[in-house]
Length: 202
Image 1 (tube, rainbow, N blue to C red):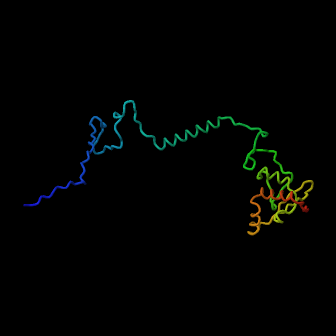
Image 2: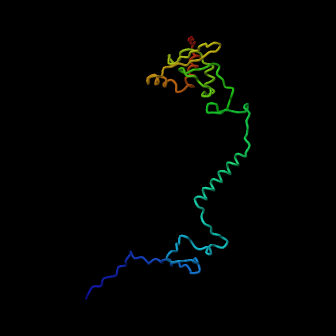
Image 3: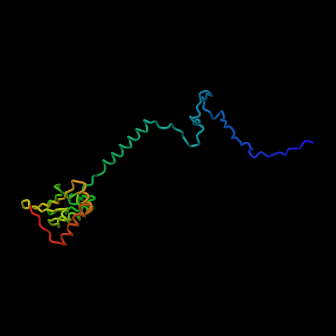
């Protein structure tokens, strides 16, 4: 007698998926000039198929979009030109900058100041630097690395800050003492308070 082989259930078997029914466009929903060979579905349904109260219109062309942008720009320009220009009197005008954030117009150097021969512009100086430049006295500072000279020029006096920074070693030596003008002036003022400086005349 032949031995019966038990049936094994196929675990990879899946039930067939229900496919969506094919959409069929009714004849009365097609355009009047419908031609099966030339009809392009991307053109959408005819006007009669639009929802009630909605009117389908053609999309604007590139030329129409460009003209709309030009009209908008002209309208904005016309509106801007029609606005009155606010005039501020010079006495109330404040020139604010990172060096002068409050717009103080009374900042002043009591003498012309030079750094290695280059004039120091007040608009490029902080308030603290201006105050220290007005207070600093002539002399040699930081073991001779920095020399400050006050030279008489007619009825005025000129302040010259001189230091050597041509070579890399010279710049490195200066960098080890100060990083900017504010730190340099602060060190010079501290040294001037600690000892009597030798006045350098020209």
